[in-house]
Image (cartoon, rainbow, N blue to C red; front, side, top):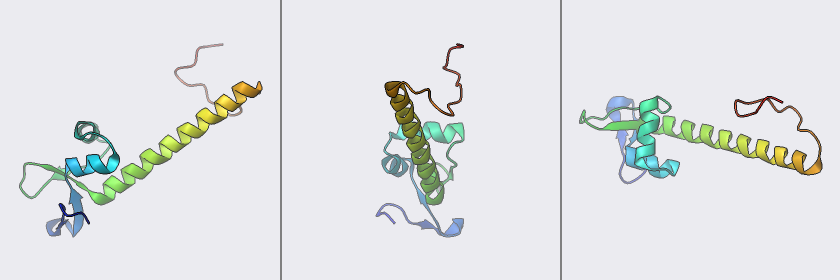
Length: 103
C-alpha cells in the first residue's frame, strides 16, 4: 500500500489508486491513462468525493500484466521474424496481418 492511497472501505476494502498513481505504476503519462479509461481498456469509478476517477489496484495490476504479456509476445514474434529473414528460412506460422501486402 502506498503512502497516498488507503483502502476504500465502502468498496469492500479494495485499494484504489488515483490516475496519477496509476500512471506511475504503468510507466506512462496521466493523459495516456485517461485515454485507457475513456476507451474502456481500464475500468474506473468515481471516488468518495464524487469528482475524481479512481482505479481498483486489482484492475491496474491485471492490466499491467496483460500489457507486459502482449509486449513480450510481440518482441518474440519480431525476433523470430528477424532470425528467419536473416537465415533465409521462411517464417513458420506467421499470420498475414493487415499491414502485409498481397504477394
